Amino acid sequence: LDLSKVDLVELSLLKTMNVKTALSQNLISHFITFGIPMPNVKLEIPLMAYQIKEIKSIRFLFSDELKNLHQDVEKKKALWKALQEMFL
Image 1: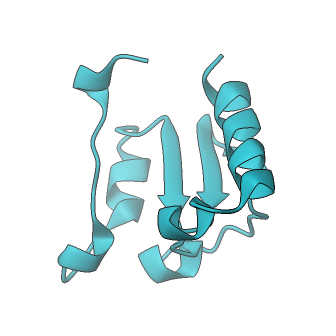
Image 2: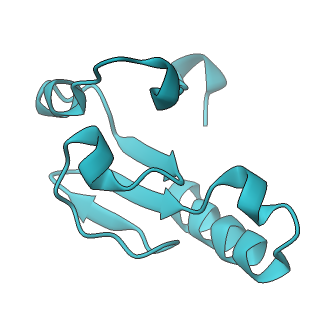
């Protein structure tokens, strides 16, 4: 993972976010959301927390909000396992 190729977007600060455009232009290979369901970013992708779903060469991962992971060891473990699967 090369951090110079990572874009972090805080969706709550954006008025509009057209994720579909970025996806259709093959600008994204991995998409991780923390506490924001896919319909909130205009994507109808059914995801279970911590289970990777690959669609058209894009790997999607949904996680609980980071603040909710703080004291939940099992969720932290699930996220860590999913991230390893996604990037290793």
